[in-house]
Length: 311
Length: 202
Image (tube, rainbow over the protein chains, first blue to last red):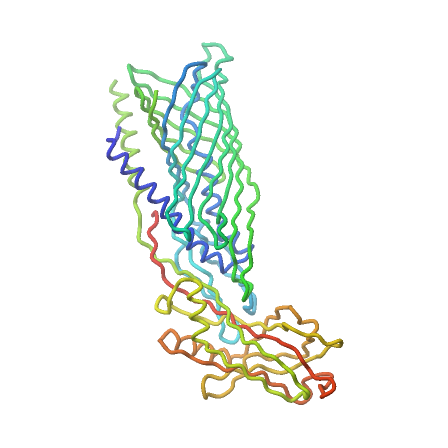
């Protein structure tokens, strides 16, 4: 495996990315302040899709759950959802006092950084803000896996970063889930391991002008997993797969200046999106350490890898 | 065992490459846009339909206030444009309605008055508390735009907005026994852009 120093550098870099993402939340709020509901929804939609894809990734790397016996595994998972060209722009409509009303193709939050200017009547102009030119939304999170009682294990995700700046706000992720071994009810000769379970998460980024959460989202994944171990001495590799039904919802609360002199409080609700996710991955197991890499096919596909340390 | 070692090597490479890729951060420049609104308020107390009501606005100070609210300074701004305008009646307590036509002109320092907004047959009762998007006139917008560009260049432009009402513009005619009394305001919306450095994932 990679050296611990190298691994720590990678994790430190990813955490730094998260902190900077929190800092970017203040800039996102600036850009959003030019938009009311419809434009803001189009502007943020790719980010909502990326967060949903990342949250529902990296929840397992094996279907093997012992019937009994205590184990405790500390894991770090990195999830990344790449954005396509279609995610970079959206059809926006001019707002406020601008005449005549026009539509234009302009940047989403992950699109190019350039603003788009539209000419109006009598020499006026409307400027749509730029995006943050992001190729992928990447999330790194520590998680703890605890088992097993009656073939059941628990998984807890938690990260909370206070960047020490009231304007920038905080970032927090909490998740909890259970998985249960299905294999224990089947014949010992059954060729693969099977498990099923659920995982719920709450993810919050940034703080708006009113002191509330800028973005808050929740995700729920219910699914089944299968894996098979191929052993050789103390090493074994384990291909695994999973099929899940994912649900994701996101709300954004900010103040919009689009309507005129007085700021308008906007509560943006992206509703609840449901999608089916198919995951295929490969785990490498050594005594007390496990590395794994996987790809998930869904409405927003994602890549994930991670390391698990423990007995 | 050789196969397993091969798998270890491949997995290690995947880890290192993905870890490296994830940690590559790029310096980027994003164009931040801020929306600001400046308003001129007018108090009318007229016993004739022929009147002018001037309101002087320190446009530079108004824009400085908008920038200060957003934590930026004049030097941060790359460009500023006029987006549009609106007007609304803020106080009106008559028992009967009035219909007004007329214009709002804008003048920079001792320059000529140019028409910024023309309004026709506006019901004061119907406009009370309602934002009406204004059709702006090119001459007035040019003065505002020039003032914005001069502000960016370091000047502090002062603008005078004037309500002009002439014969036939107010119905019914105001009189000493039934004066036209109301408050209203006209607002101009601007967009300012600034470049902001952003270090983010590739």
